[in-house]
Image (cartoon, rainbow, N blue to C red; front, side, top):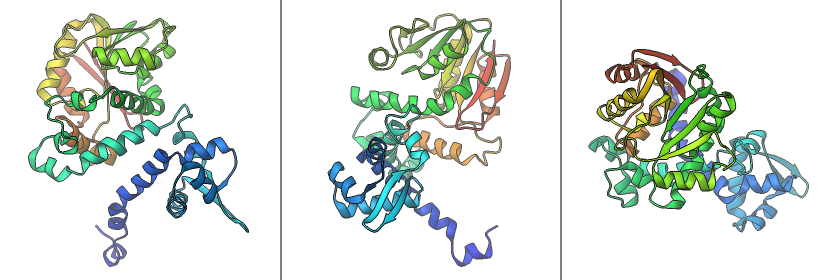
Amino acid sequence: MSSTEDLEYPHILIQYQNGFLISKVMFAACELGVFDLLKESKENLSSKVIAERLGTSLHGTERLLDACVGLKLLSVEVKEEGAFYGNTEISNLYLTKSSPKSQYHNLMYYSKTIYLCWHYLTDAVREGKNQYERAFGISSNDVFEALYRSEEEMIKFMYGLNAVWSICGRDVIAAFDLSPFTTIYDLGGGAGALAQECVSLYADCTVTIFDLPKVVEIAKKHFISPEERRIMFYEGDFFKDPVPEADLYILARILHDWADEKCVQLLRKVQKACKSGGGVLLIETLLNEDKSGPLESQLYSMNMLVQTEGKERTPKEYNQLLTAAGFKETEIKKTGKLYDAILGRK
């Protein structure tokens, strides 16, 4: 129930209506290089100096900096000669490009792609289909043709995925003891962030990234060092091409892209290829069984509506998909972060 205070003045509704304004302030500050400049300077800077170095207007820069202070992304020190701005710890760690845990590329994907698709959320709800054609003028039945509409876009998307796994990857790979599985295929493994987590955690495993030829080419060129001998590549489309035999298959943020029928189709293919005693590790954001939350999972499910043909699911729904595909045992581990782990055994 709403409190009397909320009925007299709807604080929570005002917060909700301003939600996208908050996001765009953070996105703009990242895109303009505010946080990178302040980290590199190693000292607080005035709005005038920041504007000059970024090539932005002074009055626009001042408003952006003050909004970032309000969001606790920047600190401010007021001296006689004016206000001087610096990064907060969270900005240094997550919003600067040079940080190992940088979320910059993920935020740029939100700003340049997801934000534009969400402009057509009402249409997505009415029609029940993704909005790439309206947002980008792309007519395609394959969402990944839209995601990878150029090499530049592909690289940005892969950097964005790596950004997510820099804060969640270790948790999902360590959720279960994967040491018995020595031969692992990461289907749709992209830039290889989870493969790298696997080989760093488990000394005896090798991981093969199974992805489209153009994705493999970019991963080799920009993301995976040739010296990393325990990470290999297999080019193909795992819906169309044979899946090689392995102990374990990783499907991270794969099934949420697809309708149930296609998920079962892929899982059956994996189950047939899987060695006896092997399994599949699903990495997804999980809804509560009654779908009452978590809010992030509900919002991600809406994002699947505007961007793909899939949805986020409950543990029971994933168990049903695995059972329909022939997997006998299912375990679920919640990490307390954005993504959780589901292990299905053959």
